[in-house]
Image (cartoon, rainbow, N blue to C red; front, side):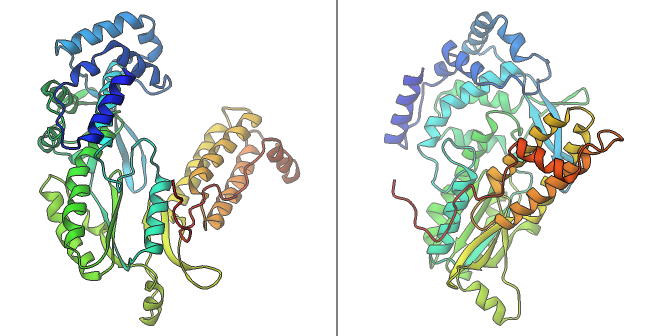
Length: 441
């Protein structure tokens, strides 16, 4: 199966206009389904049917052969997704997730493994989200170096309102048919999109959107935005600009950089109509055109204003200076994300103090801090990272001492306990210095 997928990848790369007419047999291949079963996390939440990976695996070969047979004769129908809500800043209800049944997860993974090589060959370099070998740090690195080294003076930051809930199914199918000529694959994806959502015991039909939490959703969202935004910017917007134009997207978060203000204003004006033409809505209150670049700081001070900043992928970007006084793009953890992280850590500490031992609480706290620093400890962000480490230590000290009426630690013994668990230091973990040139690969 791996060899077949490699051949598909090579064929897609050599012939970017090729339409693949025979793909469905890869999806129902028993070996492919077995590999997909093995990749699933056994600790993930279960779907509507409540079947766990362990239970499904007790009779794995028979279950996979039965699933393969139903897929082959088009007798397979995905079950409804279980609605779950996770906390989201600025929302009382939270962010909706759709949790698939385990068997549906296997099929989604098999479909993704089959289609991903085809689309990876044609996706634009400006797209970074949910793609193999690409990350938020790579997107931030490319953005920083572009602003630092290219002719960038204005920037448009935009937001698509409820993107995953608004994806138009008809347009999704049209986009898929550009590369997928096997109607059985198209029919399977339509069934996935129309499978419905179960919430409070009621099943609701899904006429639009692709549920967050489904394995296939990230790939489908990238395909949708590839045609709606990525190609449009590359083939239309950038070619019609007077000066240089650059574009960066991570999932549904994107921004565009321009040399001239007139180009930035024109892009912002056209963007809403472009999105509405494909069933999406622009969050106008979160969409701004700002001056940003090597001259923005001085120009703002001349007008008696503060230089503008923008937030992207959890970091606030601002115009700074090097030690020699030259322009430099700098980043710090956004105030919103820092507050969210500290509140989550506090909530965890409050709940954990009555559940786990002191030693285990210290180890879990260390893992949480390392996770935060692994993402946020980048060039020029040491101050905010140091503040996060400082606050988490004091939060942990407070709630460890509330495990019982008798004080657990004084500060000296607590410091020794931190040394014992190898408490992380706020050192820089990702070099994202925009002043350096890109490495030659």
